[in-house]
Amino acid sequence: MAKEKDVKTNAMRILDRMKIPYEVNTYVCDEFIDGIHIADMLGQPYEISFKTLVLEGKSRQYYVFALPIAEELDLKAAARAVGEKSVEMIPVKEINAVTGYIRGGCTPLGMKKQYPTVIHESAGMHERIIISGGRIGSQIVLKPDDLVKAARAVYADVIVHP
Image 1 (cartoon, helix red, strand yellow):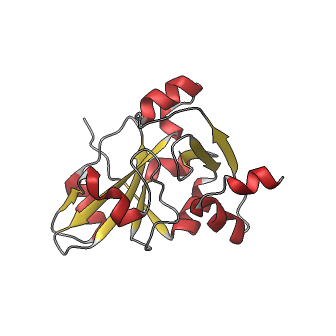
Image 2 (cartoon, rainbow, N blue to C red):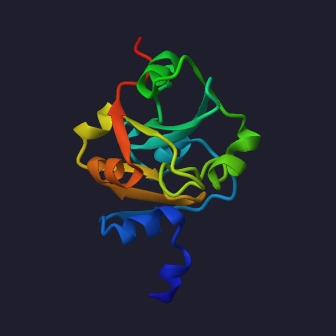
């Protein structure tokens, strides 16, 4: 039991404090690989595997977006969802300074600050979704509404539609 405590991330501690049930998946990986490769490696459906993106608005405010790994963020829809004129991805080199996480281990929960968070509305159609656990090699599986509650997030349609 003591060993399990050692692998808790900020995201997991937040869920524990809020008494939100979740499961942890772990996998072996020494460096960043994208969510699609991880889902393929673990046999997970793309539509329930969510990636976390951090953007900055024209106002200099940061925003967090979680969307299915195979989807592309619609920047105009994302800006509308958070009431900004425009938003853009932060540079990879700034991820740790802004979030406290590293690329490939970024999750909508437990960042250095509580940023406005948007989860793609498709999450609500699934019983459970998968997000990063807060470090490379770790995932959290939980109910979408529990993620919304824990991240103080909202649902919105923020993906590119063909």
